[in-house]
Length: 499
Image (cartoon, rainbow, N blue to C red):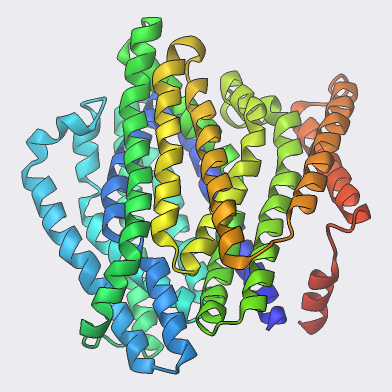
């Protein structure tokens, strides 16, 4: 069983890394072609769209996955099909009326955007609201049935469609608004692709739509808190997209384009680098969540505790490896990727956000897998309030860094509350010693990296700086953790030997 988990995690991680790498460099291409202002407009449109998309379907995939795991525990095949059908019905009930309402009420959408130029671009995404919400249900069925390869392939191909088409459409564009419009068209087409392919695969593997009546109530009961939390996340991002530029204009006398550019640098350039761990944490979550749910419903308490501890330690390990690289090389990375000094400074100064970020992401997934969705929603709302307070109070003093401080406060508060709840649910979890050692290793690797960077920066170009220091920092941290017996190559050796 452990071998299967390692193999599945490896498969999902490899595909997810390829997908996120492709998206990341696509964002770099966009930033260079359409500029910070174009990225800002593009990001605002996606942020508002994400509110409706998450409200429609964000809680359903994990809930469908958990219901399938629950039905797997009692070998109820029809129950699995019913859960998927309930998910499709539930999401269509919301998305079709909302899409129609937004389309015919488009003249009243100005209040959603801090920039009126975003309104028409946003409408291009409306068909994708229906299509990608159905795909989200199919994604949940893949997770629950442990079909990780088709899920990973479809995700990768969806991103490839967006990247290839987007590069073709924005090539040679000089107007930031036109560039944002064409990049948005590429996103919409990618939604059509994933919808068609996922439905084909579901039916090809024997999936059916059956009477969803018995599964509707448990689906909505479990998915609503998750949907509320993720919708709140999207609303929070949209609020930031409106509030932060306005506060920047008020505090510093910037015009609209200048404020949008600053927002684009922080949210569209720096944040994707800081969110690199999310793809790795997501890979772990996709594999662990169905397994954890099955063990939870089968009342395998010892195995659940073991899975939770391993998941937390994996998230901490990921943060420990990435923080030194971003702390030491943030400036060089921002300059190399975006030709923007400020984006690199934000990455460097805010790199330690990764610790609470990784812990919060994995602990939220773990708790949701154990039917604690309502509590994780409350924890998120408390953290979100701290973020908004930071932006409102601190923007006049520290500019866009008010958002980064708010983000850190959000993750710290939510992560601590999640860990307290996990202790109540699972008993005494053993991760504190691991965390302390990881922090020591991270700080040591940062010091080592800064010393090395100071030496070689006089002799090599920026790209060689990144390569040499990146490898050296990662190797130092791995060696440090290995010496403290916090890291072992045994799972990798077992996976290789089995294959």
